[in-house]
Image (cartoon, rainbow, N blue to C red):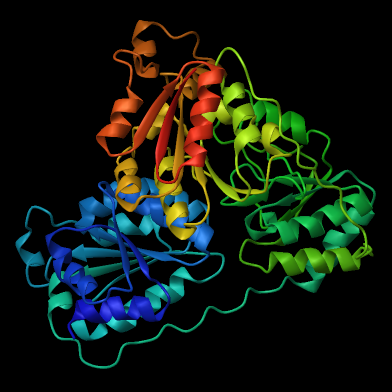
Length: 516
């Protein structure tokens, strides 16, 4: 057994059986080891941002980490944007980054770089392997770090000679994850006292508090006490739809968020962070809650949020028999006429199947999505969490690999789709059941809004050239077909709904360009 064999065996022993990869010369012995370990599913991405984004989507749905395989510092650097999103999502992930052989580093070959320095800003834990004999122990520790609640990014740097040299000793088995920590009784009682005070109180949720079981407890608390429920703006995963409590998010817009929160006197956080503006704007506050709002953290994302809510309900005397109000299944009429973002979302709510997975990077086009889908069939909702665009297609790719029996629907803005369009090729190669809907407004529409919000005035010719994507227009049908994905263009609501109906009925990847 060489170091590469030991590395692969250690990952498999820990239950990590999926590796998203874009390897190079330094990783060839690990690639060869994968041939000897057929239990490891290897998924090739043609760009490292696809690799890291897919590993994020996989872990959000599988609830366990995948591995990535990246080539040296530049390969890692190409994947950093979506590692940033994964870090903000509290996604567990093990990155394997190849490096030059230890004895070769002194020669400063062209691809030599400070990999540890590149990794640290987007990783919770970084280690460089020193010898083939330590590969297994180091990999096991990487797994431990990744599985530490609420989920961490672990990056293991593996020099080439530590993969090809013999590895002595047994394969190290990573210990099972430790249970989530329960909240402190003092913090629990303080939260209960705040709710009992009669002041206008909001219970803000995120993390696993947005899963169905926890949401039902939170909804019971809200129904019994009158507190408001709200989700933070960016969340890794929400369980939504008919039969599940409907919960809104803090708006992206600072102005709208301040208006939504203006009467809140007390904010109790359960796995969430206190809301702040996504950006700074002249004359607008960074902190979105009123200045005199009391903010209390009942539970961090690492805590047992389900238990915290159940304990809070007991402390408040919420009857276990209380059935919270939840939306009933109601599909809207199919849209007609002009194709708008609202028509796309109406058709989606009318046609989406039960238990589908929505991956949302629609950016400005999809801001009102929740209003259309509260009464839709049950589904999981995944979104961009760190604001680094280019995650939608990779996120859907990873989610589809984690949940092959479920239909995945990717709501994708056209500008950000170009960052990681290579993910369509991976969907075709793996024959993933993904429908990608491109909101084709042929512009960076969000930046037009931001230009106005920042008081920078109306865009002139030069500014418009930074915001518009219509000279030449992107042809998403040809782009999709060039990567093996069936593509369709829709320019009316009728054409879109029929294209969506066909794509949802057929297996395998499809792309619909909705020209708005």
